[in-house]
Image (cartoon, rainbow, N blue to C red):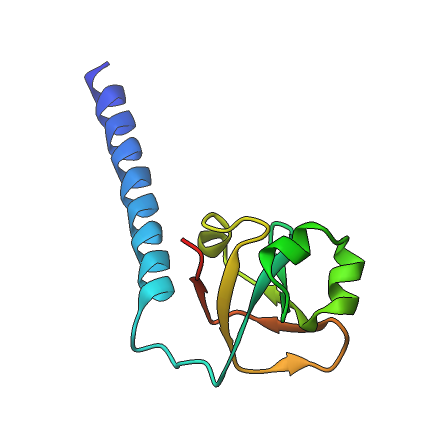
Length: 124
Protein backbone atom coordinates (compact mmCIF):
# COMPACT_ATOMS: atom_id res chain seq x y z
CA UNK A 1 0.00 0.00 0.00
CA UNK A 2 2.84 2.36 0.82
CA UNK A 3 4.37 1.86 -2.62
CA UNK A 4 1.14 2.76 -4.42
CA UNK A 5 0.67 5.99 -2.51
CA UNK A 6 4.29 6.95 -3.14
CA UNK A 7 3.86 6.36 -6.89
CA UNK A 8 0.62 8.35 -6.89
CA UNK A 9 2.28 11.22 -5.02
CA UNK A 10 5.21 11.24 -7.44
CA UNK A 11 2.83 11.24 -10.40
CA UNK A 12 0.86 14.18 -9.01
CA UNK A 13 4.02 16.15 -8.25
CA UNK A 14 5.38 15.47 -11.76
CA UNK A 15 2.15 16.70 -13.38
CA UNK A 16 2.15 19.84 -11.23
CA UNK A 17 5.79 20.53 -12.15
CA UNK A 18 5.07 20.09 -15.89
CA UNK A 19 2.06 22.42 -15.64
CA UNK A 20 4.09 25.06 -13.78
CA UNK A 21 6.90 24.91 -16.32
CA UNK A 22 4.46 25.30 -19.23
CA UNK A 23 2.76 28.24 -17.49
CA UNK A 24 6.03 30.09 -16.86
CA UNK A 25 7.25 29.50 -20.41
CA UNK A 26 4.01 31.01 -21.77
CA UNK A 27 4.34 34.00 -19.42
CA UNK A 28 7.94 34.52 -20.49
CA UNK A 29 7.07 34.65 -24.19
CA UNK A 30 4.05 36.93 -23.62
CA UNK A 31 6.07 39.50 -21.65
CA UNK A 32 9.64 39.08 -22.92
CA UNK A 33 11.07 42.53 -23.76
CA UNK A 34 13.75 40.99 -25.98
CA UNK A 35 11.16 39.75 -28.49
CA UNK A 36 11.21 41.68 -31.75
CA UNK A 37 9.09 44.82 -31.60
CA UNK A 38 6.22 45.45 -34.04
CA UNK A 39 6.86 47.63 -37.05
CA UNK A 40 3.43 49.33 -37.08
CA UNK A 41 0.65 50.25 -34.66
CA UNK A 42 -3.10 50.73 -34.94
CA UNK A 43 -5.39 52.41 -32.43
CA UNK A 44 -9.11 51.73 -32.43
CA UNK A 45 -12.12 50.18 -30.75
CA UNK A 46 -12.85 46.46 -30.50
CA UNK A 47 -16.07 45.99 -32.46
CA UNK A 48 -16.29 42.20 -32.42
CA UNK A 49 -14.31 39.30 -30.97
CA UNK A 50 -14.16 35.54 -30.77
CA UNK A 51 -11.86 33.09 -28.97
CA UNK A 52 -8.85 33.71 -31.21
CA UNK A 53 -9.22 37.18 -32.72
CA UNK A 54 -10.56 40.71 -32.35
CA UNK A 55 -11.96 43.14 -34.92
CA UNK A 56 -10.48 46.61 -34.37
CA UNK A 57 -11.86 49.66 -36.20
CA UNK A 58 -10.13 53.04 -36.12
CA UNK A 59 -11.58 56.57 -36.32
CA UNK A 60 -14.73 55.78 -34.31
CA UNK A 61 -15.51 56.55 -30.68
CA UNK A 62 -16.85 53.95 -28.28
CA UNK A 63 -20.24 55.72 -28.29
CA UNK A 64 -20.40 55.62 -32.09
CA UNK A 65 -19.49 51.93 -32.18
CA UNK A 66 -22.17 51.06 -29.61
CA UNK A 67 -24.85 52.54 -31.87
CA UNK A 68 -23.71 50.67 -35.00
CA UNK A 69 -23.86 47.07 -36.16
CA UNK A 70 -20.55 45.35 -36.84
CA UNK A 71 -20.96 45.81 -40.61
CA UNK A 72 -21.86 49.50 -40.19
CA UNK A 73 -18.78 50.02 -38.00
CA UNK A 74 -16.61 48.39 -40.67
CA UNK A 75 -18.17 50.59 -43.37
CA UNK A 76 -18.01 53.85 -41.36
CA UNK A 77 -14.65 53.41 -39.65
CA UNK A 78 -11.10 53.40 -40.88
CA UNK A 79 -8.65 50.50 -41.11
CA UNK A 80 -10.94 47.68 -39.94
CA UNK A 81 -8.65 44.78 -39.06
CA UNK A 82 -9.05 41.28 -37.61
CA UNK A 83 -6.11 40.60 -35.30
CA UNK A 84 -5.24 37.10 -34.11
CA UNK A 85 -4.48 37.22 -30.38
CA UNK A 86 -3.21 34.88 -27.67
CA UNK A 87 -5.43 33.40 -24.99
CA UNK A 88 -3.66 35.55 -22.40
CA UNK A 89 -4.49 38.68 -24.36
CA UNK A 90 -8.09 37.50 -24.92
CA UNK A 91 -8.77 37.16 -21.19
CA UNK A 92 -8.14 40.87 -20.57
CA UNK A 93 -10.31 42.27 -23.38
CA UNK A 94 -13.98 43.04 -23.99
CA UNK A 95 -15.98 44.44 -26.89
CA UNK A 96 -15.82 48.29 -26.96
CA UNK A 97 -12.37 48.45 -25.35
CA UNK A 98 -10.07 51.04 -26.92
CA UNK A 99 -6.77 49.36 -27.81
CA UNK A 100 -3.40 50.01 -29.39
CA UNK A 101 -2.27 46.98 -31.40
CA UNK A 102 1.30 46.43 -32.59
CA UNK A 103 1.78 44.27 -35.69
CA UNK A 104 4.26 43.54 -38.47
CA UNK A 105 2.21 42.79 -41.58
CA UNK A 106 -1.43 42.81 -42.69
CA UNK A 107 -3.16 40.74 -45.33
CA UNK A 108 -4.54 42.87 -48.16
CA UNK A 109 -8.26 42.27 -47.67
CA UNK A 110 -11.07 44.26 -46.11
CA UNK A 111 -11.27 43.94 -43.24
CA UNK A 112 -7.53 43.42 -43.16
CA UNK A 113 -6.02 40.52 -41.18
CA UNK A 114 -2.91 40.29 -39.05
CA UNK A 115 -1.38 38.99 -35.84
CA UNK A 116 -1.16 41.19 -32.76
CA UNK A 117 2.42 41.23 -31.45
CA UNK A 118 1.60 43.72 -28.70
CA UNK A 119 -1.73 44.80 -27.28
CA UNK A 120 -2.39 47.69 -24.93
CA UNK A 121 -5.77 48.67 -23.47
CA UNK A 122 -6.24 52.44 -23.57
CA UNK A 123 -9.51 52.94 -21.65
CA UNK A 124 -8.66 51.33 -18.31
